[in-house]
Length: 318
Ligand code: C5P
Image 1 (cartoon, rainbow, N blue to C red):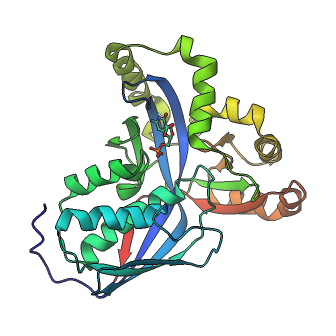
Image 2: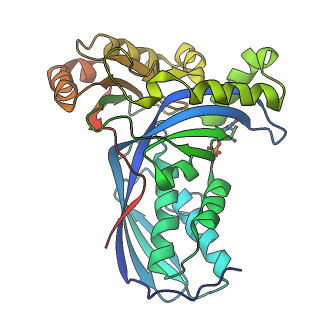
Image 3: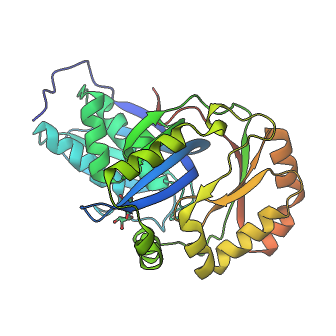
């Protein structure tokens, strides 16, 4: 149990939960826990969900959402995060109403659910006046999902292990922006994508810690990580892209449309997909391509967004 004596709780909080994209997702091998050992660079973007939280004194955790397609029951990561945090305190009366304004597309490879879970941990730690320390919040986050620890701090980070071992990097650049697209009728199963990758590539997996360490070192020293300047933009590697692209026409369409955008630098799928993004040196050039190609996105059955790199993860607006 955690010591819950602390600063005075709030009665209402608004918490922002940004999406992420993967600038680099490299699958190194298989771990003894069945997860994959990864070497990634994750980047927050300023497309954000908003969670409004208000205290209840009857111990109930009640989630409502402006998107009726999303479950508000115990399978939702927000409810799981709230229950997990509450279980650490032993206080039965702790309750909350959470209203989720969903902006990040669901099942998209943008960590929307993971970021909501991270926002719930940080928000309720404040709302309930718990003062649980950062290390413990990080541990709880990794119990909820591999991407949740990144979403707490966000910005630009190297992510190793399952994705939960974080090494913050200098933000790559305030002006870097993206055009993001996703077919709203398609979602990709993350376990399915990793499972398919394993079927096709397990014979080539690295097998020991020394080899993993060598790959981590190589990624840490990549020149593009020190900032994006001319001709040194991220090469955008995503090992899941090939398997998901081969089997998902919506990803093929998304990548084709993005590759035709005149001003974009590079194009990739995010996470296990199906959302894909094009990278730009400035918000103006991203906005121009987004605006001028809106009809092409629509004709390809894609929803689209224009947003920028964001230097932080979850934030509270009291
Ligand atoms: O941790 P998270 O719930 O996001 O993982 C979803 C699924 O993705 C896991 O059950 C696993 O099948 C796969 N995965 C993996 N290796 C990772 C992260 C996720 O195999 N590092």
